[in-house]
Length: 348
Image (cartoon, rainbow, N blue to C red):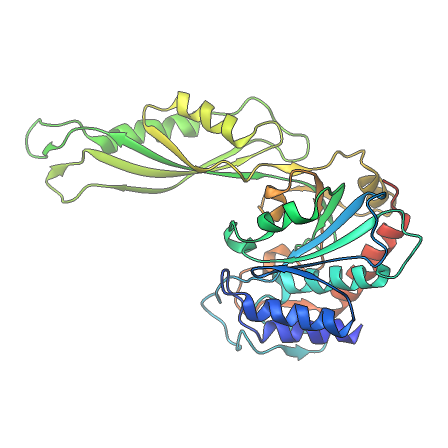
């Protein structure tokens, strides 16, 4: 097990911001070379199949990401120094998602040479997850499909997120007519925007999920005006929408477009809600082991996966993107053990 802790430390000491993951990708590839496991690459992504892969069996993808956000303000420790204090390992990316990444890799290697597996395993160390980039897992999926099921490694305290909300960002533009603020001139685009924002505050999507709850709408940015004495002719505001499984992002965007007077432009509709049924064999296994099952409000690489998937990993989401980020070694060891137990018993 120590080699996986050492790998995590090497990853921490290797800066790997989104779109700048090449060195961390090489760390992962060196590890696989040392384990004598063949692998494939595309840009900063790396993947490998179990030794006795066959198209006759269904495939399970084990995926986590190698990129990190930039260090948060307030670090008292060097974010790139993997400091051990008792059971804790400090460092940027230790929790999100280095711990889940090395745990899934350990699980993959545990099963790598097993001839009697009822399924294939595909391990993917992907890039650009933190920015929902298009040069990460998205360019790997066509190379490894078909996939029956996926475990996406994110820090969930090894609780099982069987569903994840989608992410839809809307740029909205209220249009008016400029004029002098001292006279009764123009049509104030800012006021028009405020009317639409009130409509969003009052609006509720009809379908509520038993796992993910309601669709969440938040206005998060607004911008208008050039100077104090000019009535603004355009007001731009941004809406963050977290969809449940009852609405595709395109459908939600159309509903809000019909609700608002402002011009509505979705930035992307590709990050849809995803997950599995509560009756899926993996969910049943988790329930039998008294693992907490929940719906996740945050977005991961699950959002670009079209097949059935769950989110699960050691570490805690609350530690992600925080100063002096850390993970417990015991969380990693317990995570590996639980991943292995679940896959040993899984029947697709």
